Amino acid sequence: MRMVLLAWLVWMIGLTKIVEGEILGSVVKDIRRINKMGPYLGIVVPNSFEMSPLLQSPSFVADPNLPTLDFSGRRFRIGTLKNEKVIIVMTGLSMLNAGIATELLLTLFKVKGVLHYGIAGNANPELQIGDVTIPQYWAHTGLWNWQRFGEGANDELSLESNGDFTRRIGYLKFSNYSAPQNEISSDNLLNSVWYQPEEIFPIDGQPEVRQHAFWVPVNNKYFSIAKKLQGITLEGCVNSTCLPRTPKVARVKRGISANVFLDNAAYRRFLHSKFNATPVDMESAAVALICLQRRKPFIAIRALSDLAGGGSSISNEASLFASLASQNAFDVLLAFIGLLKS
Image (cartoon, rainbow, N blue to C red):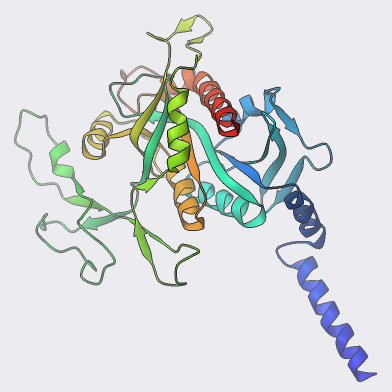
């Protein structure tokens, strides 16, 4: 009798954990049902207006039996896109949200690769609004070591000696931007910030033993396929307002992300000259870093919606061209999936 009671208590404790823990039993059942139909392409989208072209597209067909699964504040949409099985998740603004959403996607579901698309600011003067960029590398440029006033490029950073920080990537010196270019810049109390790599913990690494990553490459196969996208037709007008030329698809070297909406011409120029960056956004590098740690193929497609502060003081490109850029980004995503299947 005592053994029966003990077994019953163990069963009840286990049931309580399922019901009151992070994952309900019914959700676990649905996840298993979804994964039996996998693997899927994961589609990661920053915001609702960027996801709108996808949901309105006849190429997207929601699963008739289980079209959505809600978990931890996220909605995962299950279906097919151009006859390819997909799971779609909207991240919300920022690196944190993008990282959490991508981690949940890859933890809960059987995903064979991650495609990320959306809009971005443009730091590259050779491209224009409406163009769709596909970078080969992504970096998070919002992790800094802020150097104390009075120290310079030859001075060791705090905690540099034990490997926490580095001067390898480079720095931004504020005094270089405190006076017109024809004047000699003076010291600035803000001094300099040094860009830092992320600490990562890959699934095939040793737990609690950090590795470092700054430039994260997209998947080689995906990037090679993207070369075939460069001739597709894209939209160039919003109502009666048209761009100077028809937008194009461009594979570029680098894109960057940070928890900053960039609308500053000087920093835009700095990022392009220092890092050879084209799209600047707030999510892509987070998705890239999670996929790097999880060893999943990844690529990001970002359409340029504004000039990141490079336009006139009275221009408002983002508000005018965000819908056009969102549609162009989705159209390129759709074409990429078609090529991926073939």
